[in-house]
Image (tube, rainbow, N blue to C red; front, top):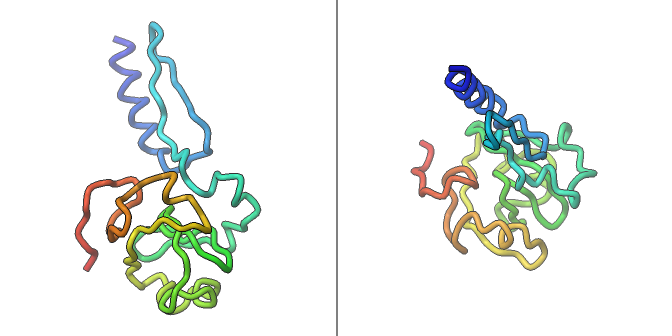
Length: 147
């Protein structure tokens, strides 16, 4: 009976704190050598040691669609946990100031690319090369565009 009460409670609490990741794998024992993994994003760039000195509170922000603009430098930036390089439409100056295509109200659609300057996308393999990204990085189903 206790297991029947504890399991739904664990599932409920893990879903409440799934995005409040601390970057650690958490296992919750529930009985005879049975563990439940409490959700977290181990592959989130915010927990990668290469980007640990970035001021995420000051320079990271969400767009109006709920996707996150994270680490950036003068070579590229993370959007929705996918690395992109700058081009004529998406410039470093605009990312720095949250202007034009980096404004929170702009819909950010770019193809998924592998970059020689940063191997994040290739090592994560969230999408196929040159596939346009519509949904969250870990949602492998093709989502429809926001309107």
